[in-house]
Image (cartoon, rainbow, N blue to C red; front, side, top):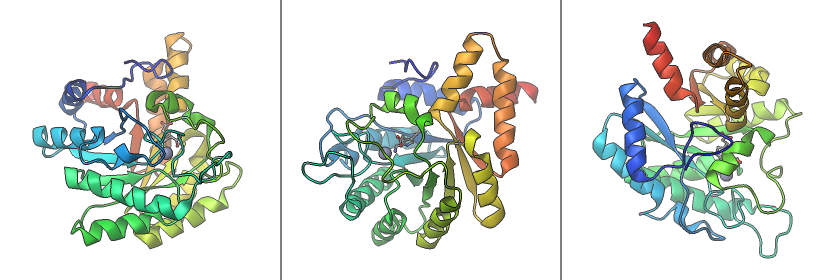
Length: 286
Ligand code: PBG
Ligand code: ZN
């Protein structure tokens, strides 16, 4: 199913995923990130950690076919909860106030189920406090001491995630994510979040959105010795695609300028929906 607000991006079945990943591998891409949409959503996000959930099955299929492909998973509950929040809520909640600590257990369980299915790295995006440590301890206890954690440490409560929520069918039904995501006006908090996640055991740090937060990417890269990943989010993608579709901008030039901007700010890796195009453009130039 094509996602209307993200032209060129689709919700994929396992069969179509195999085809799409085949094209990506042919274009030279070596890593990807998985997001899942379950058949059934409930209050405790049961399908997020089901051994036979859609993401767990996708990992097994991809790793069987491409053992060298780096398969990373987004670890969160919002695609799997009936209310659309990233954590679990108190009975009768009306404002979307997640209960932090009980959520940690479910996140750790989800991460472990991904790694058991063969994921090479997990990327928690929920923004609960203490989740990096909870996941690290759970993975270590199960013997996965070498599996890295890429933390969405710096994640702003942003309108730029709008199209993603259409794609993942994960918009909160009531309230918003401001009780767990960060205030866009606060730059210092980002440094505290990074420091905390490094102390808890994060191996890479994601900052998102990217374009309106280049100063934050730069600040992290000057203040911390850890790989930084810029997440070029759905709303950023949608704006470029819309302008390009109208013939108002040169899509390739704009996208590549954005990519260079993220690298210049200090990103070592980029997560982007333009990935397949970028890989092909780079190949053409070689
Ligand atoms: C899930 C998650 C989100 C994104 C990545 N993981 C959405 C959100 O927090 O609402 C955003 C991705 C994008 O906009 O491209 N927590
Ligand atoms: Zn979430």
